[in-house]
Image (cartoon, rainbow, N blue to C red):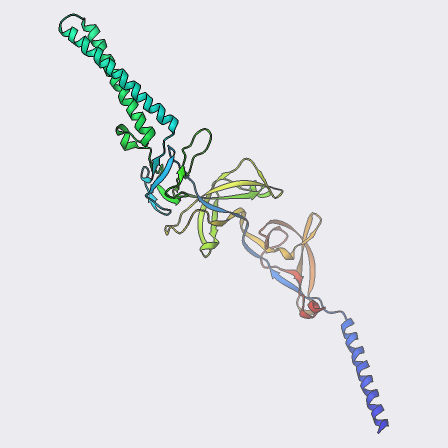
Length: 371
């Protein structure tokens, strides 16, 4: 029994040894290298670039008050459409005490002067009626009366403007009523009722009551790298994509290329602007992030192959033509002159014609990948 057991164990060891030897021998044998193959064809090659930017109105206006005060009433809210001159808000004036005191003093002085001139006019008129003063003196007295009356009215108006922000003589153009300066849509109203606001002057920009823009006149604004800006020209078409709107696509036309670069993350960038063809559904809002695709160069009806089939050697380029079939298949090196590339396919200017087969990259099998 022990004799048979030893024989079985010896046989198992021999089988394992022989199997290992055969496996290693098979693995050491060179495998046939296989390559992908492609047929040359005629097509259109476009070199494009993608620019990231934003959609924004061409004209976006900040509406600011002409006087300082407190927001008493808001007639509009963001998203409302307004016409030029339409009232957005009303401001309650909080008068400056120094200006108010000066205006009140001016009224008192004008009143004193008017009473004095009225007395002198009455005396001159009485004497004129008695033929004791000349017509010239009488006309001067009447002129002085009119001037004193006008000065009193102007002083009262000035006091009303300082105190109330509006006077009886200019009630229709009251500076307490904040009106839109353009027609469009209100994008934002950053103030609330009760907020203090100040007018624009030499020392500050003033408080923005509302931001208004014409959303029918939009532009795409982005930046392009200096290596590509030289291939752009004003007037070229662009394709705009807004990812936030389920990849909404629409057209635009390049209308501005900045003459000066700005540095961004160590690279020189040039600002560009493009006029957007606004969709009729009005889904676009100010500030949407967007991508613009621009065709930098294009050639049509040219012989092309995948760029992966090109063998670059110094300044020269080659392909390997497929000759024969099956085991008789060979690859012949052929010099070619390349042209425009779109990153996938490349133009062949010389060296190939339509319908020829060229060798591509080596086919990697699963076994080779596992190794």
